[in-house]
Length: 124
Image: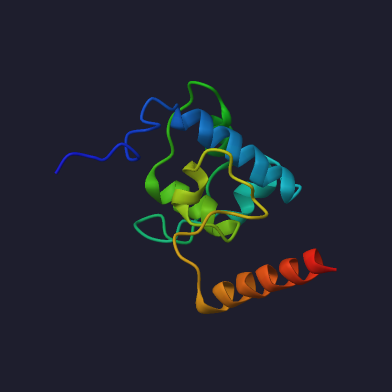
């Protein structure tokens, strides 16, 4: 089955640049440098499980033309900041309000409460 128009909308996007921008944003929000981030980011699976990502690797990921991180490295970095790996590849990531695939029941109820409150305030 061929991809739909939404699936190919940003195929020309430079995802390495998106990742660099998002990593810088995440590090800035948490006040981290590559040195402090490297102590937080631990591999979750595979032969490197439990080991931290080197500061050098993080610097490479932030450099234009640097190597792409492995999925394991991406998962380790994301996990250190309570994110999912795919969230680091979303253009315009707001580290304080990351995108989600689906809302929980509690989130849906909260948004419904916000809509009711907004309508009530608009009536005043």
